[in-house]
Image 1 (cartoon, rainbow, N blue to C red):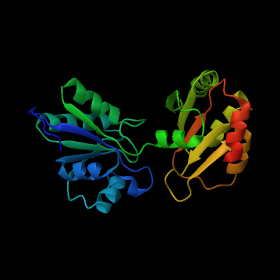
Image 2 (tube, one colour):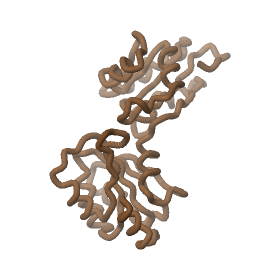
Image 3 (cartoon, rainbow, N blue to C red):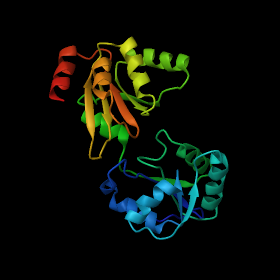
Length: 244
């Protein structure tokens, strides 16, 4: 672990695999083993990862759920006491569309050192494998649940001059494809699912084409939806679809 002249502990934001356990970095494993406390989004989910890499018995604090605010305060006090805390999420990079942000904000506000330990990211994996323009992009995360705000966001994304990256759950992907078909029926989008897993798949085509291909499929986990820029050349996107 990095030396820290401060009397306070250090908060490590440790990226974890998004599917394939082999995507854990050596540095991440070393930090988890050396940490005084491991903060996990869900301790039951994290136990499988920790057991796989033989991370010995540790004090663990769950920071997800109805006690999220209270647990963030607990972690802050541990850091102020000089404990080194390794924070992990269920999958991917902490703080990206998950509640870890609340812990990080408190740490920063109290002058506690925050060290990101990069690794797997569904956002970057989906974008890099999409075949769409990556020179400039915007990340939305999860869309609003309420229909009005959701449609307003999608209308805004339809006019976006950069590639747009979204996260979506298996329970709402059909609804999203219906909405995209309504707003941008000819736009050739990409849906990345099961990233890094055995059945990893990049679906390319119009919203209607992708919806037809997904019909009847058993869907698991979160998906990454990549929408090309509003001014993308249709022939280029057609080639992307044919290559996929």
